[in-house]
Image (cartoon, rainbow, N blue to C red; front, side):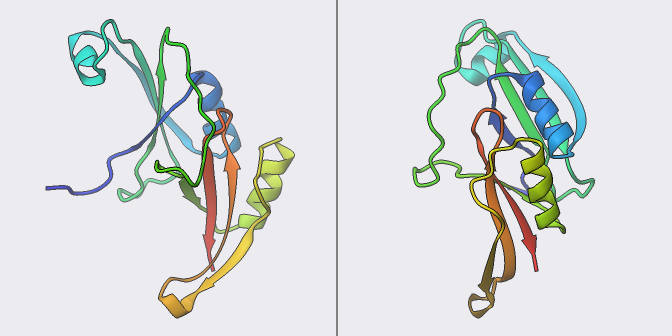
Length: 150
């Protein structure tokens, strides 16, 4: 049976650059890095001589908050498509904050590409309450979201 989300994986083009962004800009805690190679790795990814670098970061010690897994395929040319909120895929990874306006200003000051300022929503009539949110991009252009329940 499925119990909980174990981690959320994002394929990145430069693991070191992405770790620096998620750790130093977003403030997630670096948990460690590992390298995968060998027959099991080849079988899992369906690619011969596959080498993968993985890093794990987390912003919470709560068990219900899965870590972010950053994945870099070593020696492979990155094929980057444009992120598209409207295409079938995982549209974004959303982070919780209790100070969205301050986080927004901090991200802008660090040169992060924010797609809008924080926008307020009221879905109390639909049973979901009030919140503020904005989208932004990581160094690979992966769309991320910051949300503050109000």
